[in-house]
Image 1: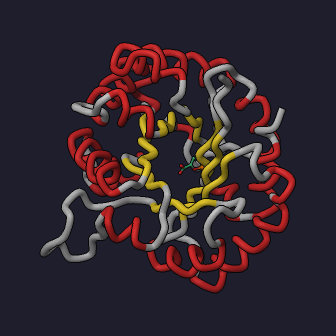
Image 2: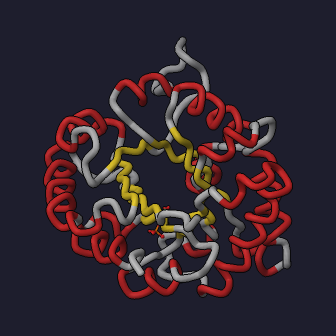
Length: 254
Ligand code: PEP
């Protein structure tokens, strides 16, 4: 069965509540025709999750994702938010292991793994990000690095749990740089990730969506997502403008 494409906008540290509500209203209006054909989510900052959840309601054309989570259920972890809290504000998904978290905030494969488990236990679906740096690509280590991140991030998960998550391949050198992987470069890594998922979870591997992320724009989205193992996109900068993000979503429809 064909995998439904899944496009998620990562708003990072952008948008006040008012700005977030305006953007999501524009998106809902322009994505009506794509509803049901492409799965769409947006990941606002924590402060805007609840207002955006209230605005989109259940079963609308746009779902809600968080950008990060803490793996403990509760406790003395100043500044952190638990998976239960995300479920409480109707997040269906949560990004984990984003390269900015890995590079700037000390995220490791081990913490990604704990976060994925905590999210699954709370009924929030993880979007697990992996990707190599430019130096790693130039040293020919891309598949080794990505393989290590996938194995580490998914360690101890059952095939059923793996079947519920999404992976996002985001080459670090392509994030926010305007440099995009070619569709052939993306497909090569996505196919390798799928082969690894088959090893870890058997036939479930064919159901797991693998998004591409890294300077996805209206101009390159359709080509990237036409690749057999590219099942959608994780979009940063271009998700901040309703028009660009809608065009990217529409690029997922064949
Ligand atoms: C991201 O941060 O997940 C991302 C892909 O950013 P951009 O689209 O801006 O490269």
